[in-house]
Image (cartoon, rainbow, N blue to C red):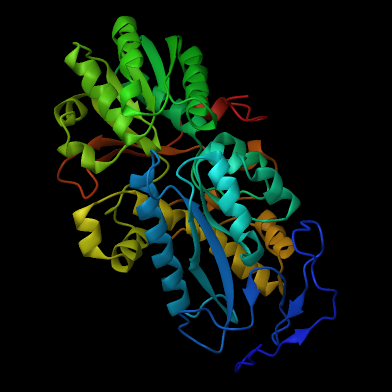
Length: 433
């Protein structure tokens, strides 16, 4: 092992790990600055180090990169996170360390089994996960994350994450987002009936649960319409939607399915209004045959404002990503990937300050966070990770309207707000359970 200026390594005598034995204690080392570390941290510099005198913190990413329903989001999320950590390194890193979020990137194809397999491949080499995309896919590795003290940043917003210490989420969850969407619609659109059209599982069921809670709170008739992923699988959902004729639809699918459902329903004379939860939108839909229907009938809810909003964080994002790539395929996956990285940065800084950069030390830092500086992209109180879920969960969301002139096709209509249903909800368990 090389010795680099600014870091002196004291190897602690320990028996070699037995390959494949998950529960054996990892070897602990200590930097000259007094920071101890074990898995996924080295005294040697990162492969693309800015300062070769610093050690390296390796973070893994597991995303939908090639053929799953969220690949249009997964690719920009991943690229944005690379840019985020590059900016961190160029600003001096995390104490005596820089961060590598590029070496250990894997494709889950939005398949829980594949997610679990590629997680096992990178687990021995990373301190934590800069990204674990998907609710059902992340659920497939949750037990091992917990047993390994491995912190993961989810590229999803299920309400279950508020009950898991190892999950470092940002923004409100699908449940509260959907409650707020219904409350917004009650104020502005005056619906009497509402339907939830959604994928099954933690993602769609969570949004549907929030929709149902808000429907009951507002005296609205509720219809539940689950639908499987795949553009070719939306015929039955469209038929049910047209037959039910709800005034409002909370839509929780992938972008392709959203276009198929909104466009297909409109072709069949449907005139209700749609509000899609965060992952349903992709600005490429404005170039699809469904564009007129989306422009007329669709709004987008979200946990934060879209790309191009006037905050220091949004500006830093715009300065850091490749503009040619963005303009060729504008996408709020870039925005999400950037926002999700702030709490992990804060936790790493706190762990280094506490001189414990082991997995257990990082988890302890996460559980002590009371605020996070999101550079204006979220309020600082959205980064509270101590206390009970009902006390600390962030309940505010945003509503945007379709606007083809906006960078990602949507523009904020209602800034951060918490509806009456979300304010009153006793958050004692995940909404879909």
